[in-house]
Length: 337
Image 1 (cartoon, rainbow, N blue to C red):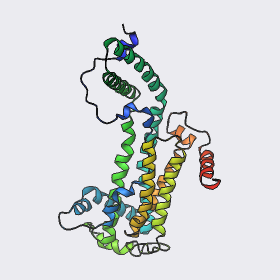
Image 2 (image 1 turned 30 degrees about the horizontal axis):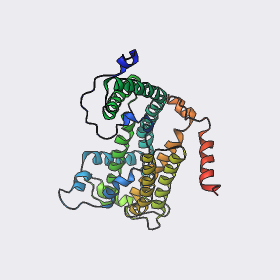
Image 3 (image 1 turned 90 degrees about the vertical axis):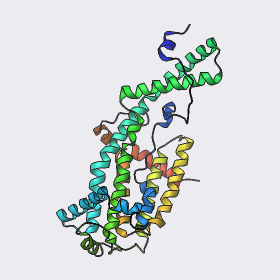
Image 4 (image 1 turned 90 degrees about the horizontal axis):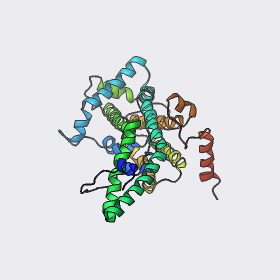
């Protein structure tokens, strides 16, 4: 006879056809992987290529309502502040990243912290459930396959119930990507429209003329490419720095996380020549966005800021995150023998 625990947890198993590994069955992989400023790889072609003719996919994107909305935001900020365009691009980026993506990033950390705190309970359930399935399999003479499918099905159900109970399903942590990524695309395309005079805004051509003279330092013309490559290289370096900060703070990464980390490193390097083929206005936006992503990443390590955002404490939290980060960086890149 099964114990009360077994009767409570186990349910009859129909014939199952399980597909890929369910993330709910791998609690250690629910930490999520965040690369706040590395979304440039997916849209490089959008900014680097022009429309290929009437009805093309790029033309549809460039004339879409979200892109026009991004143009209106840029024009509104420029009109309200009277700042030159290089400062207007920077100010708009800071406002959008600070007012939209920072709260979403804090929410992401909130969800992931709650998921991390559930891991001991999930491991305990997994241990007991495994014992109960073993007893039942022995009584009913199940094959190993049936026993494993029974375990997986019930484990998935139990973990889902925990996520519902604590209102912290890991999918909620992806909301940042679904907002930040499209916003990044629309702003990049809007700036390209301004730089090429392809915007449908009445002020489009005058904006292009203003961008041609509203640059600063070595890029006075924001409609031209950065022939010095300083902006593109800076974008690549900042993105690589964000990846390394993530890698240094992740001890014992899974094989999948390791592959993703190497992939994004490669993409960050490839973004340098890509950024060298688009107008300086776009690269300036990318650089400002990456700098905000780096600042946001560091800010969310602060115990005081996390407490202000009511992010739950976890075992992986440190009272001295910046000191630990510097020590890890020094050990990996400087004192390396």
